[in-house]
Image (cartoon, rainbow, N blue to C red; front, side, top):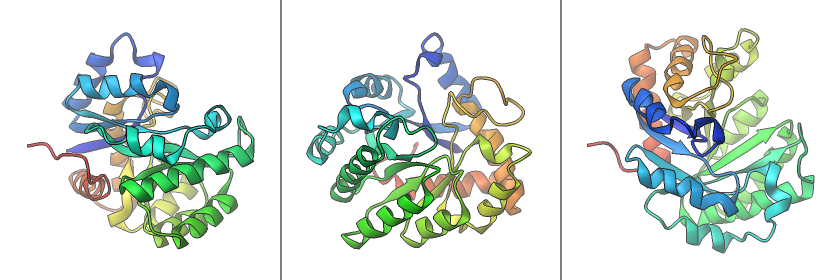
Length: 260
């Protein structure tokens, strides 16, 4: 069994064949998928997909690209919306200094609001971090000092120090198709250093399709390709990495029911 801990099934890329994509994921052994919210104002669309498919669950939150649009979203709003049985995470929220689509102070404010919601609910916060290692580490340290909260550094592509700090603070590190790319040797070295009980896999579909699908639209079934490379990287079998990452997923996503 595998789990895609992060995909975007509400994106237009999937609109024409969502049922077929979910069926292909199941055929590949992917028993659970978490479709991730990027705008609270469009949360209903994400939730509708989660409600339609037994294998799909969702998060609620505001991507850092959209932080300036949703500064009025409060922790109380996130907590209220997360009460639905199909909502198993908060986010994605974080800092993206690569694209800087929202002002950095708005991104930081939004991140702290999401942290407060994760701390209150106990649901894992899905963290997006790109080209912002120092500020992300500082916020995680400061906020953890106010009270622990569960979190995942999703689609990890940052430096080794942020991975180390994330693990030190109780977080998990999720690897996407990037870890399969030929020029990602440094990232694979980081993966080797992450404790096995903190590893997760994801697609971030429709983006970042792993080899041998690179350049194509990504989909949840392809998490098997990422898992295979991660297994080779840390020196375990494909079956073992499936067991490791699935156990880790259910330990972190405590609200998610396990398949019968």
